[in-house]
Length: 189
Image 1 (cartoon, helix red, strand yellow):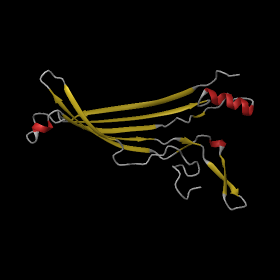
Image 2 (cartoon, helix red, strand yellow):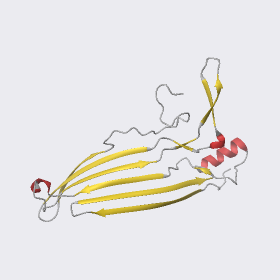
Image 3 (cartoon, helix red, strand yellow):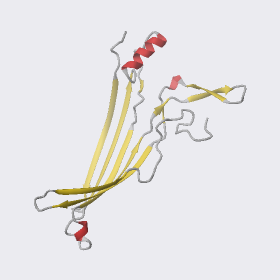
């Protein structure tokens, strides 16, 4: 038996800023903050809570697993045109786009050290009083894109595009180690 009580409440704000410095140069920024809370992360989660506990708590909200509050994007666009004195021939119809983004890490439930087993290995349990209260390490990426359009007289043509994603080769944690709050590394519990 399924109950239609699944819901999420997302509240937030977003600010965008675009600055056109000249015909050649444009900068942009976007900052958003949101908070996602609710009863469960999916309809299946509610049914699992009923199977395990016999009920679903109706009076409390919790952070949702997909809640990542901060998202910040900054970038610049350089579009050379015919007013440039140097290299104006080969730079015509080119565009350079560089952007960096910061995003809050994934939510996770921290683990509490309960003791050690007979082999001396640590034993942890989930801190269910702080369910999804912590955030893992944030993500940071920088992308670069260069395009050149080879146009004919009618305005039609071919655009060649080269793009480098995560140009700084940052490692962003997909699965969070609930003991450390970051991706698992050798030597971690």
